[in-house]
Amino acid sequence: MNGQISKEGLARVLKQIRVEHELTQQELADVLYCDIRQIRRYETEGTDKLTVVNMYAQQFNINSLSILSQAQGAF
Image (cartoon, rainbow, N blue to C red):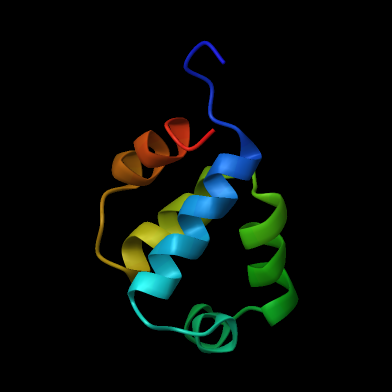
């Protein structure tokens, strides 16, 4: 993939982070003040928006680059 990040890989990483922190999709949606459908979409289809990566990073106190590098390796 030439160092590119796939949306599917990012979706898997975002879900993995949420699950590791023992939050349901609804709980995360409530904390982020968004609809659960949006969380489902991020975790199944991925996203190309860095703002979403930053939201997850801030919520779970991790580095955005860490999320992206994990997603790069999650083919």
